[in-house]
Length: 192
Picture (tube, rainbow, N blue to C red):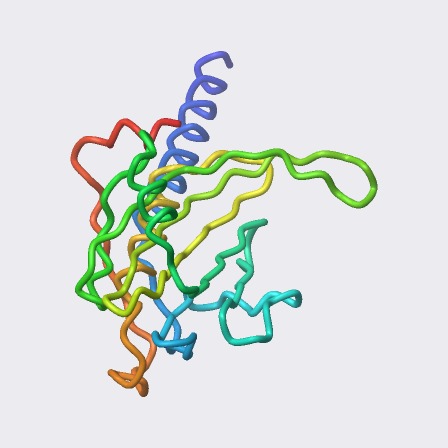
């Protein structure tokens, strides 16, 4: 009887590990790109435009269909001070914006958000930014309420960053799969 219980426990743990592994290593499929200022951005397939998304054409937010994650894209006239501040952050790492042929930074942001009812929610996000030659700053922020960011979240932001292109190039693309292979050894920031 005890042996059967141990077998069931081991099988349950093995199945949970398999599901976790598949979720973290699933390819990111991007939806059709939409214009945002001087660039085209492509959200993950199945994500929907958030109701409180900015309507002035400088920002757009998408909500995940499965959990409490929000992906925010924004463009703004960058300033040398903001670029220097993000580069000086000890948690900042280099990220590639392949579709823009630019490098940028990605860093974790942690904060406590007060809700209208007075309660507080811990929010963690990943913020990736790059500056175009024109001085326009392009940023992606993946906000996760109530949980910590992990390697799968970083791969999602990397895939989305790779999918950003200059406006007018490849505007009619269809949804595509961006495969981001997991790193052999996790970066020090992935554990936080």
